[in-house]
Length: 268
Ligand code: DGL
Image (tube, rainbow, N blue to C red):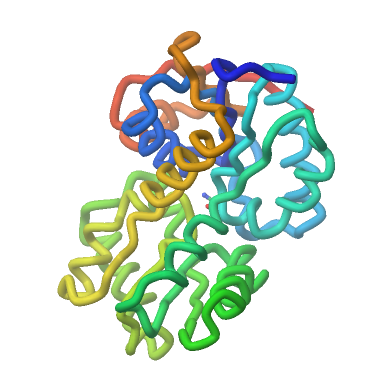
């Protein structure tokens, strides 16, 4: 059994999940976060399901060793391909949550949403998880999906507010697939970093969902409903990566929006 003040563990292939970690720390400041970025294996978006499952289970073990009460898979590619396997692997040792279900629930309940667009990595889009999940809850919606695989390397390389990122955003989003949407799901935890540019591309006429905030609010509700909210902050947030590159620290600080101290730790 883990206690209420035990940390919330999150993981992603890299820095993307820090957008979720940041949204969580903004509304749940008493929760201690333990973040693992699998930078040695980035990107997950073009890996097979089998590989994503293997990496994810290894990280789940690391988070369990650190007594996390919740393991939040803060990566859409891993949520779409490894959630069931990680949940089964973890059993009753911790609660396992993903970043897809909160967004699917949210969208299916929006009365003004009709034509939903989803963008994400190939691993997420090809799993059809958003498409099938949304239509299961609300068959009256239409869902168009598009893989935008260049966004992750573009963001990881720091091209986020310039001509290069604007050109890539335009090249992907001006296709037929997203021409009629009223709502857009950023189905990758890296993408909130370019949310403003995407909104601007659509002349602010499309509701580009703040997926990191939706996930954080879902987690808050879950902890409250299950009487698992921390009573006091047990310690500093901790951040681990499987490999350390020179640019990574700078990008990580940009994603989390405050100074963080990264430690290298291999978990396999
Ligand atoms: N941040 C990950 C996601 O949400 C994707 C990055 C990757 O391809 O590794 O899907």
